[in-house]
Length: 371
Image (cartoon, rainbow, N blue to C red; front, side, top):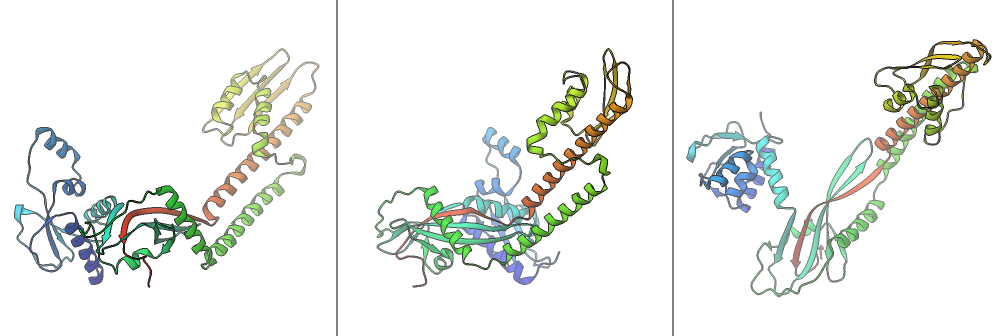
């Protein structure tokens, strides 16, 4: 696989900075090649062999540290490395690079930094992931700093901090005053500022999402309206509200099977009103014999009806069962329609998600602004 030169240069720079920060031993190598001996903890994070490390720790062994030989171009020069390490081509998305990214993310989720100055002020720095969520998702990484003295929020913090000399050890001549803080309260301030900033930006993405949502809902309504038109006029029933009529509907079905205590009532409850297979129930009384079948649509269809005695004619029973079937069908369509409507709203309705990815406590001589 060929990697673009500018892309391979960025991968090389990231991996070099990672190995330098974690304290790996670097061997001399030509450009485009990295050779690093990993510390024990980093070895555990970058190599997927947990049972090996369990055995090493249980037996109190001291194996040699792993050496990684990384190439960033297929035609990079070969290198004689210790321990016979095999070369690995690093590309975006490859296994080794994904392990390096996961390790960097885990170790960089919290950090402390100091500016080399005699008098510094603590700032809480947040990196946040802002997402425009609809059927087309957009993600942005942004950073904000909160002054812990007056709780003022500064945007684009990382852009300004890159221009400062920040170190991970406290300078000897620096005076630091402890300042208590509540992390949740600080993130609430940042979240409010992010919402304010988003409100000032172009909202075309939300308007387009609303237009697509309206089109989807209109298409859904047109489809189910056409289904209603296909139903014969004599069998049309007002569509019940699924939320209000579910229990009443089930009671009526159980009543057909003998007051809800028969085998049909148990089968219908087990199938939840929509069968994953088929169930047959039979009810016998002094004067009636009814056979019904639950089919895949969850609709009760009488297979044969024969009445004897003074309760009515077979035509009357057939009319009652036809009305019941029509109510079943109307309920099924209404429930399906609401389910699809909820799915369309979940997928297409515009939303904004704000999630923190990193947090740092940084001591600065002045706020992170352009001034």
